[in-house]
Length: 286
Image (tube, rainbow, N blue to C red; front, side, top):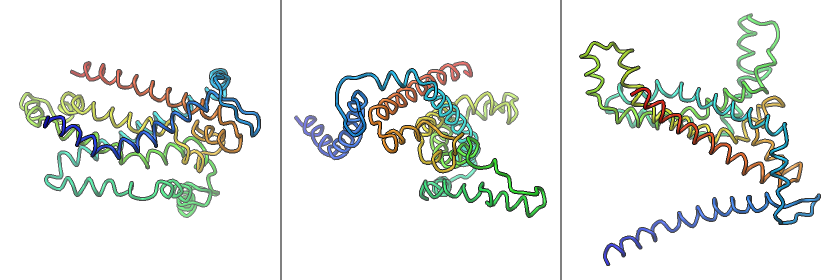
């Protein structure tokens, strides 16, 4: 009886969170899924069981191109974020001693600033009269401002990698923090140098954290809307921008819903493939 009361008390404590998740996440996804099977003629929306929107997603070469571009940008952003975050996480895990909490707070300070402001700051840095062009002109390295720094996939990748790199630090740090230091010492006693010890001991044991950070960044970046909209330009448009257009200017709610559901399924599938690949890679290292 006591255990049943404890269980009931735990559910009561969790009930606000459960209700919020059901209403804010499951409810919205359910409404999105229902609307994706509807049909729309101008302002007249009809809830039904039509699969025309999904058929359009499957048949459209432009949507496939957007999906591939979004997956490529998301993969590159996740890779660069992990590449930037790993040395920082290694430093915090091994070299700062008892000041780890201080450094973790300092390293996550950029995420305290509005995401929108961080993205807009890159317009000031990479713009036609921005910091980069002004510096190059002042140094005499160029005669006129460079116009290829902004409004392309490269600017989107740079801005997203800068915005998401702090989020990759924590999972990698946790993986490194749990690493048994005696294994590294044993590798050194057996004749391994620092680089070989890192390749044979530290990196394989840290791979779960590395790929957790990769997946953590890949999924939200895949459907990002703000960054491509602000600094992507025509060549840097991602699938999130196209989805937003369907709910806005194009006024095609069924296609927007079908495309949103399809994007989530594709992102989930790619994430599952990454997890399976991670397990095989970890086994190969071992």
